[in-house]
Image 1 (cartoon, rainbow, N blue to C red):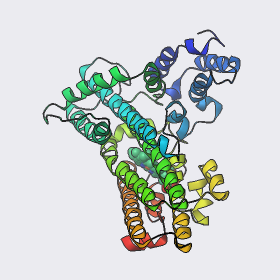
Image 2 (image 1 turned 60 degrees about the horizontal axis):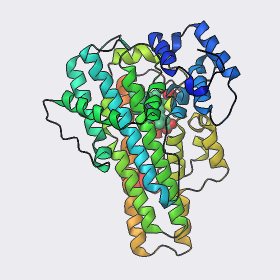
Image 3 (image 1 turned 90 degrees about the vertical axis):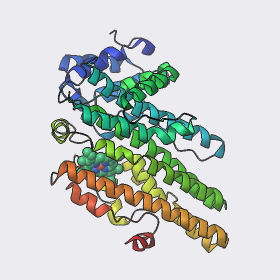
Image 4 (image 1 turned 90 degrees about the horizontal axis):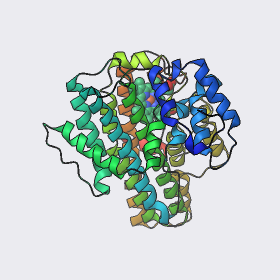
Length: 397
Ligand code: HEM
């Protein structure tokens, strides 16, 4: 590796292989020193952005900046960024679907390779064939909506999910650009060498893609309401609810992680918790501004950028809805439609929280979280955070 060299010629695969050999937590100091020197010699320009991001992510533990964003290498993935204009709406949705499929197809391909004995990546605690077959089925199911929107189907013969995965993965790879392949390669930096951490990382990344897309849909909902387009606002909410529901099998996938494997790698993920997920908190705060108590708790102190936006008066669906009502801009049929869509979205998010709580309880028991909360008691309490208004919680309880 030549320090300060042409960013395009950087040997990403060699560095990633070295990280995979030991897990990020155990990478040798001399390797980190070398990466640090390369970073010092790499100027910050548009052309070196990818390399700089990669180096920051590989050096996060050494720098004392390790967190959820760097663990999942979120800056290396082309997440659907928030966008409000209709012209780009379909592009963003396609981008989400594409990334979502790439992540899950890649996770399943790793399972295939491990079963076939063609990889020695993350060799500890390989799962048995029945567990893996379940992963194939769930993985194919969770991709089906995104694939259908791309005009592909995942009709699977129930006894041959492995074949279906192999065929699908080959087609996905064939269609990928070199940049997309590099994105997947560089955004897989497990902290240890336990097999199941691969699935854990890909599932979290896939959920992040969905939350990022949801944040875009909800922001567009606010704008549509503000501009007096109640029908468009209702459509955005409906699409968001569909996405959230379609992603639900991700929880079933993560539930196939072997508890002993989870316990083995989680020792080294301390400090990285989804409580730091910006997209999730954006979705929440764009629906309804958080109460002061939550805004000043770990929930929002863990996402300072989002907290600042809220404090700066970020608009929300709840606010835009009340304003439109107050100004007499909502015709009765529009109001009824919006109420229905808001209720459905709130139900989908409440269901997400409930399932997340159940999985976390199963995996963690009474252990504390990696985001410095009490763990499941925190999650039990946040299930009742209002989605749009206090009224929708009252309606459900
Ligand atoms: C093995 C599975 C999982 C366990 C044991 C687990 C556990 C936890 C715990 C204990 C917290 C509280 C914060 C902390 O101290 O870390 C938390 C928060 C959170 N988790 Fe998970 N989680 C799991 C899977 C997931 C998945 C797949 C997602 C999807 C992205 C996710 C998203 C979140 C979010 C967004 C929060 C913040 C919630 C809030 O602040 O209201 N978790 N999780």
